[in-house]
Image (cartoon, rainbow, N blue to C red; front, side):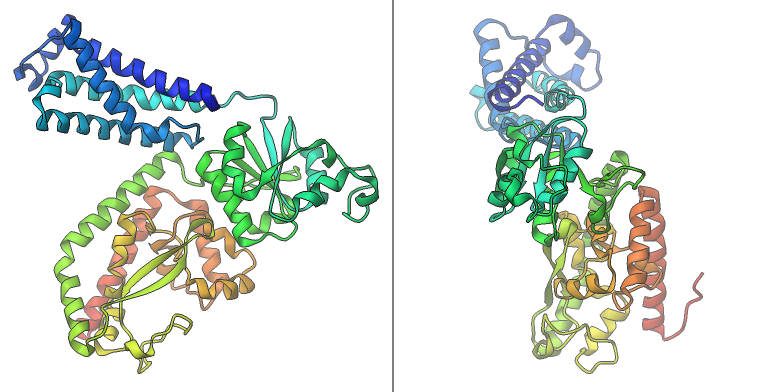
Length: 479
């Protein structure tokens, strides 16, 4: 990937060139004659421009597109899919802005044929251009940095890494200790091997708070994590940064139980699966999430209004209940559910009440049995905090307990939490963390768009069964 000022020149210069080329082609006689043959476009008036009129159209388009593509003009590495999608979204925003400018002020209006051709041309070329300039030059073994606080592990990793290691990034308070690792007087105290330390060869690139900047400044390909005792915020924060910036992450075998890896083999370093989804399935999954949540909110809005009114009428309390839960990479987000317990009895630190508990209201008992209390989470799916299918998001207050019960619990954090999942349709709950974890990890390993559809269909059938049983009091044959 081109970095620094070279990236800015390439991104801005390439954008200007593509926009001018698009406007020029839109006004070329050959292109206009071809556009006249296209249905609908052929009915629009052709208005070829040249001279000052062409310069005015091109300048207007360039200025609007550059403003819209602003976030992409800074050298922030992204995954290829993210680069392409952001470039496409920003290009659409630019063309909508051009249309709006022309609508409100005819003086700056681009002819409709020119605008439509320019939109199509830029949607095809701009994402390709930004993906092309983000590609990194590959030295043998790539460009690697170490991130962590364990000098002994880092010294061992240096012998296992192929290619140049540019330096290390460490949490606050550990930089000096790591920098002293090459001193013979400190090698024994730091637990380094008898062969001596190579840490002295490495410069400190800064603290964890600068990891984003370091990845850009040094054009990093790979990050190797070496934490003595992985702290949740530091360890998964570093992984999250690698994920956002499209940088490969590796981890020492001793820490592999905390992360989702692609296998061990004979290597001391193993790859961390920061993106376990296949790219095609990733797009299909997000599209399905948006469609499912959007349709659900629209169709079920009368039901949700009725539930809200019933809750309010029963005891006059709040309609929704908010709880902080764990998202991917250990982040947190707020989950909203319809309140099913008496408000005076509710406490974020209290365990979840079962249906026989007298703290549950009459309306609450009904919406729990029919799963209608979960409907507000459709909004969380729509905005991207959750997915329709994935490991069930755990309450942050119980994470410590669950991690103690299930050693590999953090492996669930590598995918977005879901409304339903393989564990839910098999009846596994947080009361049995080991069983729940087995199902969740199995889902992560097997996940695909079609696997999601099977889980959703099974869950919908289970909800229908529960609704019929609750409303009629008669069982429905579960097939």
